[in-house]
Length: 263
Image 1: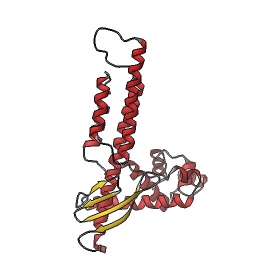
Image 2: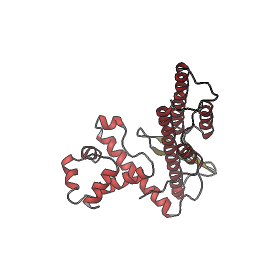
Image 3: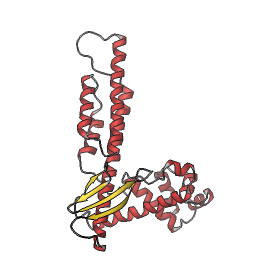
């Protein structure tokens, strides 16, 4: 990795020199030197992994508590986990993608296909780690490694899709709060100031409902049908979010997720 690439990666990841130093278990002075000279191999590998996960809409940063408490052991564990996950995703894609469509249950932290089940747990930073593998037709064996990798890939897809959907939902919530005072009035009579305020508050409450749904989606519980219910209530109140925002929610919640890296 060249010094120019390193600096560009840090910019893409929105990392300051101080933040990068903490995550790379180094000094700010060393990070600055890497933007001016050559970049060590382990540092380049970590930064590339972070960028790839970022482009795939997957968590890569350590959790806030680990960062605030400067828990270097936990920070290093997350960095190692990131690099392993990226390697798995690349290997699966290099052989053409998962051989089977694993069904992922984010709420109960498991992925299933045929007679196999992979369990996972959520990391504090919002990511996941595979924890168990079971077969119901025979004992597990070393030959199942590819199946487990496929499951991990499908789990990553589910996390990526949930993150994209939650972001699209929160964009609608933000738009709704900002424009809650702009709504369609039916009939010739003008609303009183009090009635206008009540309508604005009612529309704003729908923004809260969309925010709550975004949180549910991240946990694997929210559905597009629930979003449609909120949207119908908004429309009943005379409020219509921008079509592009509504379409973004539909695409993310109803379409197959695209996990492949953009880089």
